Structure formats: C-alpha cells, structure tokens
Length: 372
Image (cartoon, rainbow, N blue to C red; front, top):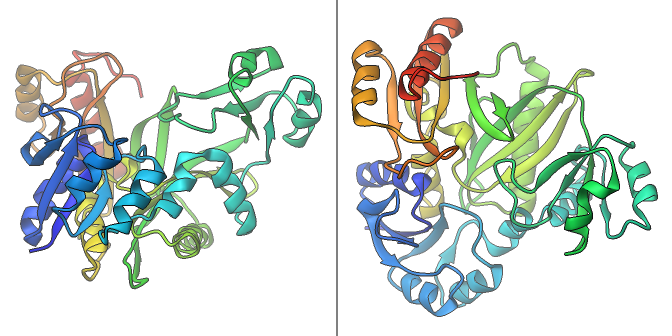
C-alpha cells in the first residue's frame, strides 16, 4: 500500500481522501489542528515550518505532497535528504512561493505573460512604472498573497509605500483581458502528462466565484495553445502532480500566464463530477507514480460555484430537496464571512440550465443572497 503524506488539512486534502480510498492508498495528513477540514485523515498536528516535526512525519510515508504551498523550501529539502520523495519538488514550489521568481522563470522559458518589473523604492518608481505601461497597474506582494490578498490595482506610488518599506514589490501591467481561463493537467515522475480541457473562471474581489467547463467558445487554436503552455511549464519546471495555470485571454487572441498552482486547484473542482478522472485522483496517481487517468468529460458542460461563509444543515437540506441534480460539497469549516465553505457542481447538455441551477443553490445556501 502506497503511503502518501499531505501537508495541510484544508479542503483540498479532504477531497483527496475518497480518491485515496478507491485507489487503495493510505493518506496521512499533517495539519495545524485536529479540527481541520481533512480531520478524517489527520494523523499528525504541528507546525509545517518546523523541520524536526515534518521530517518525523515524513518518515512514516513514501511520498510527501501538499494541500497548500506555504512550506519553506529549506524544510522540504531536509525531508528529501531523508530519502522521501517530495512532489512537487522544492525547486518547482519555489516559483509558487515567490511571484518574482515565477515571473523570472517564465521569462527564461519564453512564456507569454503580462509586462512586469520589480520596484524597490519611490525613487525608481517612475522608471519602473514605464516598464509596465503606466497607471493603472497591478502591484503584488512577492510572498504570501493568495485569493486576492496581497494584490492591489494602483494609480499612485503612495498606494504601496507601506509595502515598499518591507521589501521589493512586483509591478505588472493591468491586462485588458476578455476573460480568465484555467488550464489544469497532471504530470507523473516519468513525464507522463494528461490535461483537461481549459475552463473559464469568474473572480469576485480576487476570489474564484464561478467555473464553466469547458470554456465557452474557445477556439481550437487557443485550446491547443493553452494545453501546450501548461505542458511546457510542467516539463521545464519538473512539476509532479496537478498543475494549474491561470491565464488571461486578451481581445487580440493571446494567452498570458497570470499565476501558477502546483496542487489541485479551485477551478478543477468541477472535474469531480464532469471528468472521467477527478483532479484529486489524478494528483494522487501522479505523486504515487501510478499511470494517469483519462480526462475526457462525461457530459458536454459543467458548472462549479463556490459557497462562502458557512453551510447550515437546514439550508443544505432545502437545496438538495429542491435541486436533486446538484452536487453540494461541504468542507465542514466553521462559518466565517468570506471563507470558502464548500461548492456546488452541476453537469448537463446545456450551459444555461445548469448555471442557473448552481446559482439558485448558492442563493439557498447563502440565505437568498447571491451575486454572480
């Protein structure tokens, strides 16, 4: 039996558990709390930044993988020195730890992305601003930002003086995009690669709100380019496991890489119902060195909508009673405003009916308040 250790006890680790059971894998979760979303598989509780604790946990598994991307690379390198496989590798994860490193590596690979530069002081800011096409532009903290945190659209240098006092700031052009896409695929240690069709994502305040699969009206050329981009990045960076590439589609038909994630991704939740192989099963197959699964769709269209705040049992029952074809996933997290509490998926032949169904389910769960 393959023993897979997962660092982080969030919803991504939680959703790996059913796939692990089906494959006969033994999943052990290192979490910060026994009450974590993935509590069913939590075997160790501790600090993922503590080298001693993580090495001790890793000694009980064959391969180490992740629910999140925050473990220091120095700690992961220490784990790998013990002989335990770490997937994705510390070298690959470094690109998700620091956005400046990511931009620089993508530039080395000749990957299309927004204009970018690094600004270190208000003195050099005017020249830095010219490099990204002027105001408005996007400012990002190089480390620690996610789900819209650590990102600002700015129109003056004063808006990031507080960030500059602590270190460099990544500046990017504000791309005038038509829509946002996500390209997911998975790669095994042997280099086997399987990709899903690209999906369309809608963000609200920097957080994914809705996903449509496959992306509506995407040309064959752009679909092929999207899959090629992800495959190239996975190969060149040596990613093992699921890779998500967030993309901007521009009005002139270009694809620009926005962000990378080297783990199952919010935009891939729809594949649990829609695809022959879910992203969670595929990730486990990949890191375990097993053959990858087929990624064809079981229905023409799929929709996923995130549920925020909390999921009350009575409202969930009401939604399930009224929308029997909808699949609601609860993360069993304590209610908190703005927190991802779960998601709903529907699949079918036509987009509009399933999109409306998911929005109506979200309205029920949210107590009648849902804004697409």
